[in-house]
Length: 195
Image 1 (cartoon, rainbow, N blue to C red):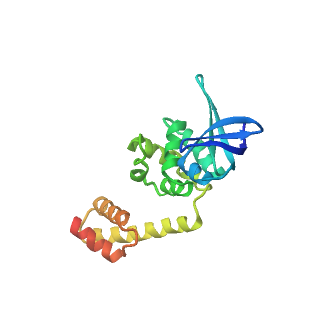
Image 2: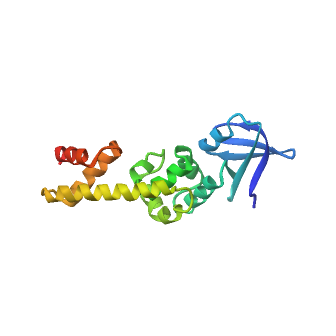
């Protein structure tokens, strides 16, 4: 119904902004990312999503269309409401969130306050294919492919040494998470100490 609001910033807090659009003040719920984007600007443009409930009419505003698109995808997941989606978008930038979902990093996603592992996994399962076109860069996709090749190489080496595939993969994923720039040789050495 409302594509965006553009006007003077009458009031700004980390959770909402009041935008004066032609003499009418609209209270719009925002994420911390949008709060940072507005900064000290006296005027702004927020792309909006309007939710009508029995007990309230709520406007959510976003500094970019990408952030709004991610919000819409998130609230489409059963169990994720507007406030939870806003909390997720406050915790991660749009491109970071897309990459977390694309890379299936449920452990990182569940660090958001009020979000459990099952809901994080559900978000990933339902949105992995949908986030690809939003903000994931070609470099990120190439990095995922490279990371998967390196992980696969490490798992193969460890299984040849007699360790189970599942245990090897789990340990290597943890090592790469702790130190993303570690070489495959050092990762295998570290895995041998943990297995």
